[in-house]
Image (cartoon, rainbow, N blue to C red; front, side):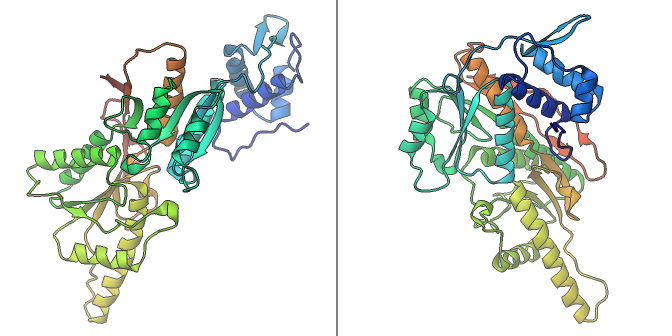
Length: 397
């Protein structure tokens, strides 16, 4: 049988081998106390290096699936008889599942849940037919041991979260949180990242830096980014009476198919031409992608108009962009200077780690508020800025 790994997959090779061997053990292909094939045979079966096989076996051994006996080989340990119904389940709740960033959070959750031997149950709140009562019934079903939720804006899921907690089920909010809800959450250190992005722009000589948001304004992650942006301006004496706020993309809603239009492009051009703004801070990846596309359109139009007027100097707007993104925006943008890189898988995997500690009693009774540092990516090099403290900080009430 062909057990070759998928080298195009984002999943590490050793993890693919580990998962395959574990599934074969659980399926009773290798019976209790039976020897696994020798490492050289596994190397041939999976088409990977011996180091990869050894790492996969190390993981299986650490989880108790196998044991190594010196001079004899590797043997399968007897497995407890556990049915799917008895296996604890983690529920993942989100209003959107298909967005690349949320999908990465889900993938981190799924990987960590597999490692901890939890089932994963996904509950999408993307349609009106899925009401709070249905979601509550799904999230508090017989085998659900804990819940990870990506909360929707406007506190749409506040009552749902409250009812889950009232039933004694541990809940972790990821990426954003509800201020008045006594619950665990894991978020990126948005305020620090926004401060550093804005500060870096000021160090490049920018004095008029505008903020770009979209429909999700009333969420904690955006509030924290705005605070960091304003703090950096305050420190450099650049904050005036109010924020330089460009509401160009207030109607941008990628998950509903809204990817921008000519009206947004014209509005951006008008705002830039009628202000002294030379730098823009985009609060998420969707805005940054649309902004960079619109800047190319605007500058192409301005250059064409200028050439038609027999002026060969060109007339591009001198604008630079800093943004939050789930990959480096400098890879495809001529305008992006800095990217605050949000690795969604980190939030998902750490949410499972926190839930597991809750379920095993290995944490305090107080809500855990975990802030994950964000790396700042510079286009001038492939390395990220590591001046910030790379530790994960925990603050508890």
